[in-house]
Image (cartoon, rainbow, N blue to C red; front, top):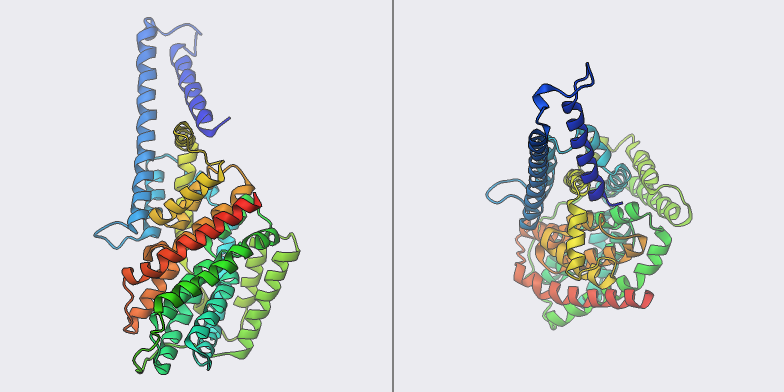
Length: 458
């Protein structure tokens, strides 16, 4: 039985129960005099309950529409409220409207997913503070190779790091050092920055820990880490080659840029902390690959080991955790749970099926994932679609489509925004047109590769 049907039946049982209690006297068991003409009163009471039920459904629909419309806009216009703030305000509104109790709200939050996110963010933050990313970016920029080869190595390294670490921190730490290195070599930094952003997005699709939406998909659908890695690796590797080819063709040999001094922020390289962090990451990935232990518990254990330090303060590490993403997840978990239990989701799916749109069909699911990922961003899109997908078989489709779609537009991925923001701080400006000239063909080709690969697997 669907959740909407359960909700409606429960409502009518409650309404009938109230009528029976109101229509009989508890003392004598006889009908109350004020209900002697009980048929009109029964109709009035039932009509009142129906009006209340419909009003509550309207409240849920209004909050849901407002939240996802604001997600599409990137926040509330003419205010400083971003996507995370919108999700939190939506959850608060439903609590205030008594559409969900505080106890049910806490139960709606998927704690294993939040734990996995938090644990891996701590791991990435420790490596950033230890100077690992800065050293990688510096060594890349100083390599005595041609610009085309430098771009290829950068794309490979960014893709690999993003597959096992948070892709947003990879971009955040490497972008400034990359700009500095390009300036010293007299290279135009824009092609390399766009390569970094696109490779971070594509590479993060290779594993179930590469980005937040993949972590959610893996935890919710209980996907095998190893099996997903083997399924996703071919289109990801082909996608990284596509990124290199598209950027190389768009540059057309014009790699030179002005030689200038750039003061890029750097973290001091700490050999012990880097070795410690990389050792923990290696053991963590091996545990993901070869054991069946819960990924969220493993990630928390890894975070606990790295937080236990005599020299690196825990508040410095926790200060680099992306709390906005965690708040976004918590808020949307609550909003989507209320939508599901109210029956709106089941009615929406029934409407789509009546229109010939079947989410059980992988082509429809693939196309809808791409569309929603660019309208409301990939994390909110995946959180909504996971409520409707039939099972684990759809996991790779959701993961590849939502991640590859992030390269289409500048606002499609947090990694894109981070690279552009870091570049602007160092007086390198990337317009949305310039990003689209690379992002649109990269997205079209990588999505075509992913769709073809999924069709072969099917």
